[in-house]
Image (tube, rainbow, N blue to C red; front, top):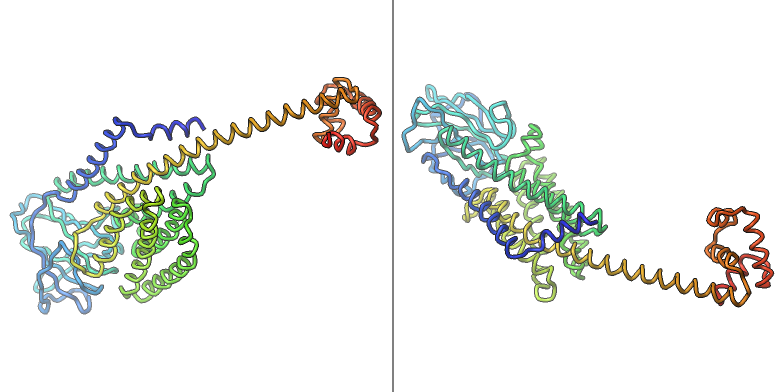
Length: 475
């Protein structure tokens, strides 16, 4: 308990602690922004929709259109050929990396154009993993000096095709910076999860377990968006569909956490059946999407999950002025919900908006974790103070009861002319102890205890233990 108390008071923010926290958040923010704005080779990208991908592909009947790689495109899922043309000189003596920061590529093939025919050279994506890309987003190592690179792709969830092209040494530095940012983010998430587990073990309050699970689902979902699931498995089925049940888990655990955090207002009690209905609808949409591949069902499942999270935020907003925890909840999740709607819905259906990667989503999640961590820490400190208060009250009550009992036995001793040993035996009898137990407690034989009990019965004019207990209680 002292260790836990130390953790709690470590997070009571004085001026110096606030300064350290600001520096940490600014470092995290600038590292992610720098990662996303890393200089790369400019290029032009065009695309052509494939009615049917049969190899080798004939390039004669492909009609290319300009493709804005910075924004989602309102296409249905399917197969495409992308033509990437570098707009700057690439040296034939150097290697370059073409990189695709999206988790939704089922397959992508690097192709060579030969006699008006596209011939596949390398494959990557959720359906293809080899030693060159053991985990993370798909990428290819290319030889420089080529005017055009051809890529054939297949999408499971909409068409969002971000592309980055840079020299291999530059990409390695870019990757190290990205891994550093990932380590900071997931390290912070792990610390918060462990702290909530410790609080739950010591305080036995469900709110800590609910927040830990809620945060675990959010962070695991972001890990899916970062392409980190490829670190654990190369199963295409898992990589293509694992994010949907995670999003269902987010709004289910979020319901329990929000209700506990804001004191279970009546609105949450009325929402139980709505949550059950939402789970059924999301699960049904998920199964229909997995069986048919129709993007409409995927968008429906995602929309239900985000709609439920937004409803908790609206309830918190309704209690903003009367509930301090509701204020924290609104502040914590405003940025996260905005980015989540942009990232999981707007990007998939092709609505024009802010260009988002998982880095911005992580920034909003860090903001949420810091704000709610303050609320959770102060709740833990409050529980510590309450435990101390009630412990003192209980100890005081026990002491008063013990003093009162001693006084009662002293009165009985004088009233019935009991000896000190007989009064002691009587007190043990009142507590329900048997003769052998009393003998062991007083370090005498059982016969001695029986002798004292006979004397007590005679002096108090009673015939049984129950009469002795009744007489003491009546007195």
